[in-house]
Image (cartoon, rainbow, N blue to C red):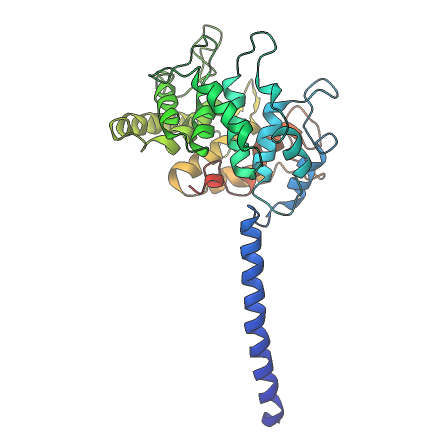
Amino acid sequence: MNKKVTPRVRRIVALSSAAVTVAVLVVLLVLSMGGTQSKHLATAEFLKSQFVLGEYLEGFSPGVPEYGFSLEAVSQLSQTSEVDSSAAIKFLLESEPDFLYSAETGEIIPGLAGKYLFASKVTGAANGAQTQTVIGSLSELIQEDGTLTLTTASTFDYAWMSLGLYAQDQQEMAKNASAALVTLAREDGGFGFDNSEFTTASSTDATAMAIMALQLTKDLDPELTASKQSSIEAALAYLDAGLVDGSHFVAFDAVDINGTALALMAYLATSGQLNESVHEYLVAQIQEDGGIGSPWVENAGDRFATAQGYLALEGKSYLTLLGK
C-alpha cells in the first residue's frame, strides 16, 4: 500500500514545484501590467460599464464627458488587471489633451492637469510628449512660493497638482504646490473648496485630498516637514470630529459617500491601517448592480460615487498607486 503511494507523492511534489514556478510568473506578469486581482470585481466592472463607448464618464448632460471623474475612475481602475481600460486610456490620456485648457482663456486648468499627470503615471499611458507639455504649462502658472497666478485656484487644484507632479518626478514643483496648500487650512483644521466668501466651511472631501497630498510630499523639503505634519494632524482631527457613528460622513444633510471614501483613503495613507468601521460602511453601500450607491441614486450604483470609492473598497489610497 505504501509502495504504491510513495511514487505518487513524489510526482505531486514535482508538479507542485512546477505550479509554484508558474504561479510566480503569473504574479510577476500581473504586477508588470500595473494591477492586482480585485476584491470587488463587480464594482470595478460596474465602473467600467459606465464609460460611454468605453472612453469616458458622462456628466449631467448626456454625451458630454466629465473629465475630472473620468480621470479619477481610470486611475482607480488601474489597480486591477481584470478590467480592460485601454479605450479610456487612449481617449483620455493618449490623445491630444485639449480638454485640459480653458476654452475661454486658453490657460491650463491646474487641478484637471494634476489628475491627468497622476492618471498618466499609474496607468502607464504612452503619452510622454503630452505629459511634458502639460508639465510645462503648469510651470508657467506656479510661482516660487507655490501659489498659482489664478485667483480661482482651489484646495483640489493644489492637492491634485501635488499628486500629479510628484507622480511625474517633478518634486520641486510638487513641493512648492503643497507648501501653498498648507496655507489653505482653516481654523478648524479642515480644508474647504477655496478661501472665497462662498465656501467658508471645511468639507470632508477637500480635507481628505489635502491630507493625501501633504502626506505624499511632506518629506520633500525638511524645512517644511514639521508644518505639513502639523497640518495633517489638524486635518485628521477635523475628520475625526465629523465622523458619524464612527463609520461615515455627511454633507448637505445626507450621507457623503464620496467624502467617506476619500476620508478612508486619507486615514490609510497616514496610518498605514484600514479603518475597518468606515470600510465596512462603504462596503455596505454596494448595490445589486455592483456600483456604490449614494443618496442621489436610488437602489442603484452611482457612477460618481463609484469613481471615487472603488479604490477605497479595495483598501487602497491614491498614494498606494504610487507605491507609498
